Length: 115
Length: 115
Image 1 (cartoon, rainbow over the protein chains, first blue to last red):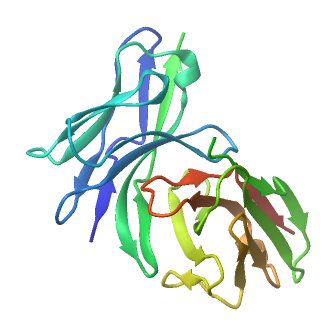
Image 2 (image 1 turned 120 degrees about the vertical axis):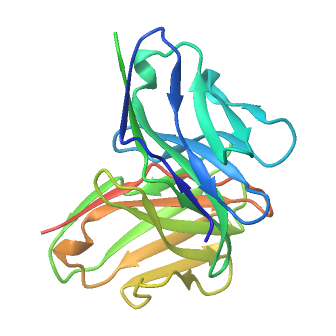
């Protein structure tokens, strides 16, 4: 089955420091990978995706992610964290659902950026 | 662009009643819409996929007679929770995809509380 795993429930980082939110995938074939962010009581906002091409993908709000095939990882990164980055982050992979392509989400990682 | 709205954002209903949640794509035509359910501090669970003009396809374990989905137009899908019970209380999120696009655009979610 196509799936992603987020090994950390929570990541804490001080404002201004670099942040990494981890994601590993288990996929047969070429993975289509996504990162989304969710603020409290809100829907998900798209950050970035990897389909093909450059392994380093740049997305919204200064986030980027590196696709690493040998480590089957797609970690989300940002060079300098902001307090406003505090939110719930989901990694996702495109899968075949009963009706076509859908997304399988990781369990989510809560990011807390402290001033 | 790519804005998806949901209405209502929050609803409280009594056990045994039915509740309808609307999902609209405001600035694009959504050939496919997805309905997810999210429990507190948990990931999103795909409930069903609806394609405009056809019946929804439900994921395993989701009762189609309880969660009625209608995708009557390219900009509107509705989820009706019939004969609601307290265990149906959850955060329901819809997403929409245009054509063969890889990206899904998420609505802000609907908080359903059944008393």
